[in-house]
Amino acid sequence: MHVLRRDLLAGLTTGILFLPQGMAYALLAGLPPISGLYAAAAGSLAYGLLGTSRQLSVGPVALDSMLTASALSALALGTHALVMHAALLAVMVGVAQLALGVLRAGFAVNFLSRPVVSGFTSGASLVIAISQLPELTGVALGRSTALGTLYALSRRFDEVHLPTLLLVLGALV
Image 1 (cartoon, rainbow, N blue to C red):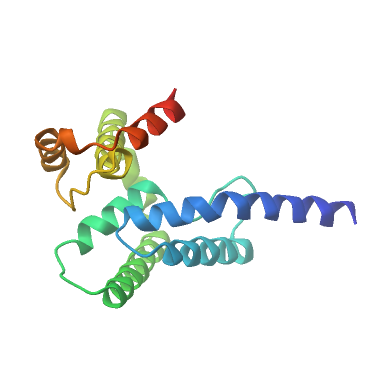
Image 2 (spheres, rainbow, N blue to C red):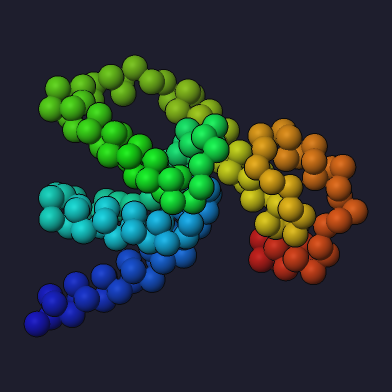
């Protein structure tokens, strides 16, 4: 009974964290928030059945969301088709990962130097932060590159919604 209570508390905590996280990562990928909830739930259930690590977090992450948005942004699709293409992309990546696992190709990661991985992660974090500037300033800029977003915001800085910006700055402090 004691183990069941701890498992229920762990599941509740994970669920509380996955709700906003899953929705935010879906929005980052350019998908409806509900698709992030499905991705978080599906990943957790699958790993609960098949996984072996008790400390591994499974579900949508910022880098995957950014890469999904990048891959699908060239397609001019409606919401339903975009979600279907994102799901197909996820299945394709899963099949590729499974194939690489079967082939024991994990050794290839050893050829990526720490500075390369660190640079990619730092660059991705900057792109993600810049992509959130329209929401943080209240200025609708549309989707663009990181430099395009910064340029558009600098041209329309007088439209920044001051209460929104102050709330964001207060939260950051």
